[in-house]
Length: 483
Ligand SMILES: Cc1cc2nc3c(=O)[nH]c(=O)nc-3n(C[C@H](O)[C@H](O)[C@H](O)COP(=O)(O)OP(=O)(O)OC[C@H]3O[C@@H](n4cnc5c(N)ncnc54)[C@H](O)[C@@H]3O)c2cc1C
Image (cartoon, rainbow, N blue to C red; front, side, top):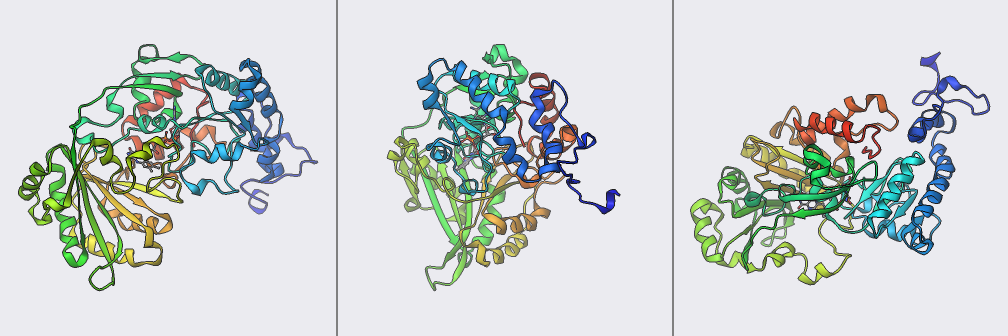
């Protein structure tokens, strides 16, 4: 009768109990939620999550945690359950993407805000003991909100430190052409593993130390601290912006920039932000390309250099501003004082957004850019952004990367760009998490390697199999689970 009855799931009536449809394995407490979900959704459909959230493991987990926290006042201050009046504000405090703060977003069972490594060890121990999983949040910048939302009801550990995800996923900034990714400059790390041990570079071993520097720390453990190699920066650097509309030859300049940007001296980092504007001359809608960059040197050195390398852009002294390195990071959007505030706001923080990334290996023809511009006149494109970074070292052969920002409009542009970007696989930057390119299905443990390979190759290319090998060695039960 299979073809003729309800599907995905094939439903059942709880009072007509039927163990054929799935049952928890005896002594399998670690996987109990995942296993229970197989039969649970058949009996209870969407109500299953609600039922399971209020079930035993939650109470047992909290009890276990309270015993391990020793001091009951610190437990009350550092652990927030859904019944706590501060739960929602703590959850939202560093949720940077408002797309994941709506009432329908699945929220963690409890939030632990540790002050001491022992608090994290306790949370890991109690989660494992009671068959729960854990999510780790640092800055909460994950593009898909994976550090604080989950279809699983799990506790979430977090403090607004900010580097946990950034460095463990690679971490590029405007210095990367000269000094490499943030992860390349990690010289040691302190990690809590699945057994609750505190490991450093030596004790975790070469493989695991390699994996947490770009392979996504959240899959391997909880990073407590990074030790970084510092690099020298001048007292003052130069930032520049030159904006050109279509009427001012933007198409040709964007096209030419592809030939030039990756050959510029390593002291220059350049990107192009493309968006819709109203022309200052006739107020008509047009597309504008803003060529922005940072140069580790003075204006007097930059202007002749750019005149030689990219004369068509026509950079003059008035387009350039000298400032300290710290100011250059906040330039145009924020003031230096913002660094003192926890609740700092940048272009993508505390907004609703969806983003996707791409890599360009072959020069995109001018006609492809001409075909792209009409999409910026669509209603939805009002706040949309198309940003190139050049060149990005995801793997050899990349000329530059593209970041698309904004909801469904951006998906159409992403489709339009298919012929012009990396193929087989279409690569993506793991720090620009994008669940559109695939995610593991919940409760599909058997298929998880095959499923994970679909997105794994896109994010990690040939490194994916080595990451799987290390993951299997250090966390064979997939406790630090990722969608
Ligand atoms: C406004 C904005 C600007 C950005 N700019 C850049 C940029 O210039 N360059 C760039 O490379 N990326 C950039 N990103 C992407 C950013 O690097 C990633 O989203 C990164 O994962 C953020 O780290 P986080 O700690 O803030 O994120 P979180 O959301 O807290 O975590 C992200 C992932 O890392 C895991 N994780 C967090 N902390 C730890 C920890 N301590 N131990 C183990 N795992 C952990 C989480 O479980 C999750 O899987 C930007 C993102 C935003 C929203």
